[in-house]
Amino acid sequence: MADLPTPGAPTSAPTPPRSHWFRPRIVAALQGYNRQLFAQDVGAGITVGVVALPLAMAFAIASGLKPEAGLFTAIIAGLLISVLGGSRVQIGGPAGAFIVIVYGIVERYGLANLIIATAMSGVMQFAMGFFKAGTLIRFIPISVVIGFTNGIAVLIAVSQIKEFLGLQVQNMPADFFGILSTLHHALPSLNLNAAALALACLLLIVVWQLAIPRLERRYHWAKHLLLVPGSVVALVLATLCVALLQLPVETIGSRFGGIPSALPALQWPEFSWSTARFLFIPATTLALLGSIESLLCARVADGMIGERHDPNQELMAQGIANFVTPFFGGMPATGTIARTVTNIKSGANSPIAGVVHAMTLLLVVLLAAPLARNIPLAAMAAILMFVAWNMGEWREFVHLRQYRVPYRITLLSVFFLTVVFDLTVAVEVGLVAACLTFIYRISSLTRSEPVTLADPGVQAHRLYGALFFGAVKLIEELQDHLPQRALVLDLKNLIYIDSSGADTLLDLAHACAKAHVRLIVCGLAHQPMDIARRCGLVHLVGESQLFPDLASGLNAAAPEPGGDTSPAS
Image (cartoon, rainbow, N blue to C red):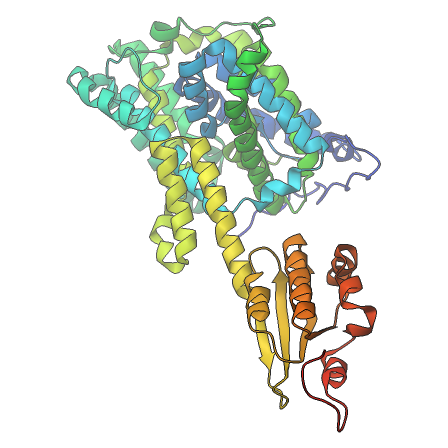
């Protein structure tokens, strides 16, 4: 059953007027705002802040950054996305989808260039929103989205094996086979304490996820436990075990020296155009992936609250957040599905809940940062293992037989290329494969049906579909087999002609004129008529050879009684 809107909350915010090119959803959401809605937003914001705490640190550590980078991102970017975004309930922050890309950028170009790449991606996202390209993201095929999402999930899980088993590895490579080779050689350094702790945390999270909803159906008091995520429970218990039992495992304190209890100052890296040139592809990947992730998340939220978000406003907010955050110690940010769903289920009504979520994390950094020293990295790895499992659409692999071969090839190609090579290469190949599949499908829908006539000197054909570059072979076949006296084309059911189709029709008209074959065109209307006039086809054929329907065209092609039936001279 779909989640219903919270009682008392507005079912949908008014659509922003077209005259406003930049209008955050918070402006409309605060109309009619009251104390009851504010209280619900505060409760939801605190809840989602607690959920975001371990995830933000885990994503940063897995990306090769310090844990505070994730917290600063959740605070600064989360605040900006909520205040400036186009969704009423979306929560922004660091996401698992960025782990592989960010780790690769840090490994190859260094931390300073990550700041530049993230800021560049923010500029790209803002430009996409400004030029109303938000709706174009929806045109990316679902097979491509599922392929790279599952591939990223596999890479996240593989990257966490080191911390999950407590292996001693100095430098972890960024490529898949390099990771596997390094893990294989590091197996003798297995830390049983870390492995046992990580396994216990993972089992606790899974049991909590499965058992609490069942308890809630039987016991009324258990509904309060649903407000506490299993990852937080596992993190707290693991930290207590490490602190009380003095377990010999790596912690945030031993690896990073703890978390600073203050927000960072402005960082301004050295910038050069030569560096930006090399960072263009990684920045583009960050921008596209963040946009896709964010707008998919917003669509999920729309279905839960019965509202429609503004994709262009959301992209502009994401762009501003990703431009500002890296200069204050943050990493790339996007809309996050898990935290957004938690926000909705906790009773959020407006972007104020996202603001409270950011303020909750800020208080944790300012007041409780020293307590994070004993958080074991093995517990963080267990949390990310669970995130990776939930992130993937694994059932799609089971159901692949239900889909056509092109869908299977696209999904599997993107998946394997993401895992083995690079996300950018995977998405590029996936989009090319999807485009080729689409072109083939549409061209197969375009067809030519011959009309049976008693006169052997006249041919008539009905064309259906779209005459574009992928379907011009139909006209070329007609040109190769011209009749003796007249060719009648019924284009009434032709909905679209592109420049390649128009050029092929011009070639056909020239071929008919050269062979002294009369060309009669019937049913031209709307876009086909417009392109026919603009390309010169109407002038070449002649207005007298245009007829409204096939019947009148055939009457015109019929020879007069007693007339000459030989080819025109």
